[in-house]
Length: 274
Image (tube, rainbow, N blue to C red):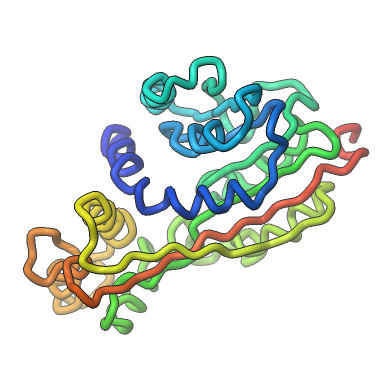
């Protein structure tokens, strides 16, 4: 997927995720003022939500590895008149470009907690740059049931390489996102808690959600064709194509849901001294 395609998918699918992320922000109880870090900020949508929720004195710094993506993030922040409250820097989550004990809290949405190959290092880096007593949160999409009435098809698609990405066959089970609590505790995070939040879609979907669902279908299962039967693929295309008469979100009785799981905890007083 090109960077331009990825940016467009982030933009189009955000209305699907936004209500759930707002709920998560409200319940995380980040300090209303101070300095926060958004690791793997993408085009800045979660950072903007945070700035809207927190006090005007709060400053949120977003970090992403792609300069092209950060251009879009800065444009988004300007469009929301949040100058001075949201800033963006280029950098890797494996080596954050900050000194120790800089931030009052840090979170990552669909990034640091979700990549099985970088997760441990990213967690260590987030812990390093957050002040003792500050909160860390790992947030990631954890499940969905979107192909209403077709559970066997959805199960087959979920069993493909695309369906269980970013994980791979043979990965250590301890590196799976839902094992994050143990890694946080091992990394010096105390008071670790886990909670799952649900979002849903009812038909007929609005124009905005309709576009988001079509984009999600392509993102989640669009590359699964080689791993499913031709008959399954044809059915999936009919159900997921917004130009099809069978597009699921257009149905009056359609219902689907997805979940986000949040792992959060507090940086121990001794952690950043190790």
